[in-house]
Image 1 (tube, rainbow, N blue to C red):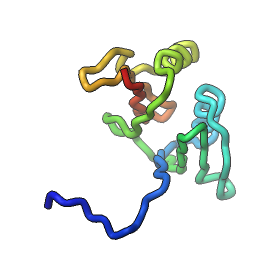
Image 2: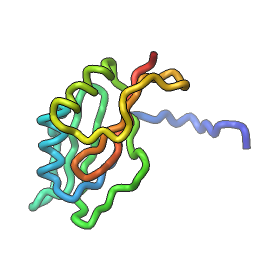
Image 3: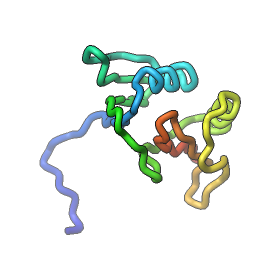
Length: 125
């Protein structure tokens, strides 16, 4: 099938769901280091949380037995990839792939959050 299905329905935002083993530790990482803001949480104890920054939105979901995959789980576009790379280095964030210009037109790097989720960060060259 080569034709896109268009039924007159328009899609809105899409948010990444990230499983985490420790939601408090994940919240601290994404708010204190990356500057996200918690906008919602649910459960007692908290088992789900929404974090936002600019146009980016993350949904954290608690899974104490979670094991991160060895592939990138999120692709994040930013306006200052060098600046974010410096922030990650300054805070001792594990860099999986160093910052470099890619042949597909992005300057990019990959970091891992405290649960090992790999986040691919890019900026158009």
